[in-house]
Image (cartoon, rainbow, N blue to C red):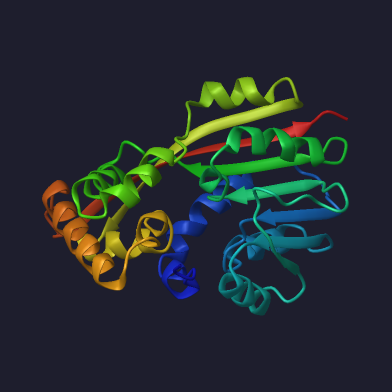
Length: 258
């Protein structure tokens, strides 16, 4: 299995952190004692949380030792735990749960969201951002190539099991019985990139991983070459020679009942 690469992930740190910054900006003005960064990765979101809440106990959760080592070096005042967020449970009810581009990797993230809300301290807050790119060419091509290659028997079940992000209304209906207040919105970011190679590099650090993990090294090279070729045919060059990567994201900030 491929190890998560903090170096590859951080190559697009500014673009990835922009959504985390926008999510945090909509959090209420409060002073949480315990803050948990779910799927903290290499600590870019943890840095934002430390800056916003300088006196809080901050805990980062991630399943990658590589990511956690980098995060610890970047935010030494925080604590980090290696765990799968699908099964993690806090020892003490947190006041603020923050999940930037993490929960969508969990197969049943609807049930996970309900469970996470139940772990909050009274009037605690959960803030979540999830990429919503299922229908974008970048993601449709991943599924198409998975179905057409010699790896189809291994990759088709993965493609079919990728949990789709539902419409905002579904998350609103999920959260309102559990929460005193729900703020939910969608944003579509547009990232100029130099070409297909940069799109490949972007997703190698995240969404492509489930498709690449079951493949041999040679198969990965063939898969990525095909993906790169199809991306080049699917994205129009702009007058300056760059491509525009559309990246929709869904956000919500909800406060638990007191």
